[in-house]
Length: 145
Length: 145
Image 1 (cartoon, each protein chain N blue to C red):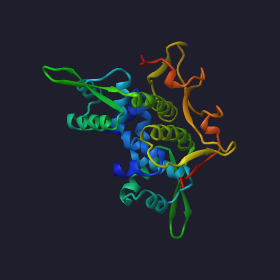
Image 2: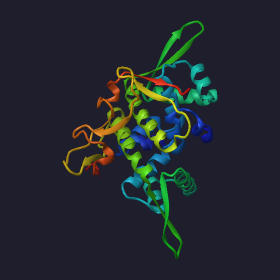
Image 3: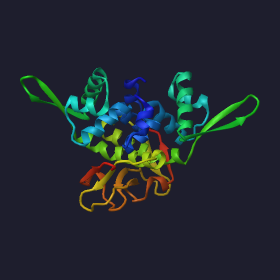
């Protein structure tokens, strides 16, 4: 997969995938969204090889989805926290979780809960202009000039 | 990435990623959502190597996201169409496109348009129970017992 090509085409989906288009990246963002920030936290949560984790953290930082911050000078240690772009990716992960629950949800699963109502969250993608779920919205794709 | 492990954990996001957690798979589903169904259509749209395309189509079919249908007996030819699960993935791709447009959207991009209103679609993920955008919803994750 040629990331530069993905990132320079006219497809908005590709533009997003160029930043987070692999499983490890999404899982790192998932863990960051629940408060993890340090290399060893991600490594132990994901069981990911250190060199792969380093590469993904670097790519996510370059894409502006994570921000690298030095939290210790001696020894030098960095942490990785979600930027606004990274926080804006959380709802997409929630929608992905809803879909995973529906079509691959055997057994017990974790659940997002609304802090205010205490009720489970059910993530639905709507068209903001009409308020209708996208799944029930007839639509077509318009290519740029 | 161990897909079986991804698919057997308690994280709903992982359950989704186990089915579609790589860039090629999402791009194949994108093309299927705009009417492509034949091997050569996907290959030429994506510039993907035939062996990789075969593997992805097989995995997406096994995951129940695509359905394989024979459309010619002589010569034998199959096509791949979205199942209900695959159609339910379209709104997630739209949300991903919205995010890609916002954070990696330089230049001209394609746009989803509502067939009925003729207006561009703006995909937003909400909590169905409250109607509030997830981005503005304080929430926490509850692990299963």
